[in-house]
Amino acid sequence: MTQLTAGMPAPQFEGTDQNGNAVKLSSFLGKKVVLYFYPKDDTPGCTAEACSLRDNYEELLKKGFIVLGVSPDSEKSHMKFAGKYNLPFPLIADPEKKILSAYGAYGEKLMYGKKVTGVIRTTYIIDEKGIIEKVVKKVDTKDHANQIFKMYDNV
Image (cartoon, rainbow, N blue to C red; front, side, top):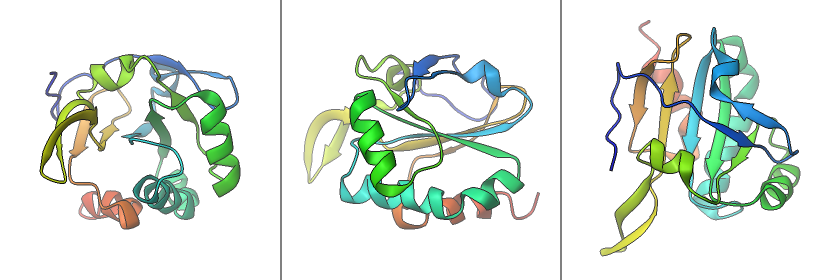
């Protein structure tokens, strides 16, 4: 499994969001990208994480961040999830897990003490040149936006 770390080039990808729009990482050069991987639409932790980013979306934009979510769910599932919670950012459908795998966000993990294969909740912050700047492996789902802001407080 790929272990991406700060300083490495972010793997390029293209996917489709909840509205059927193509989303390419390369289109966001010049902006910081919060690329967050989550297991499943409309589940408690994933909803808390998405709503934390939604509630702080204007502030994230002001600080120069673009937010992109990725999960193995379908465009249709993403559309329902984004609609239900008024999510203002693209949710990329990755049912083949190509993007998830490229970022090492799919693989073996411990869940309730058992080894399972699934999505490993991870957030990558990619700088304006397409280089991974920060990696969040221990995501605070209820306060994820503030977790991101705190990493940039001293910058």
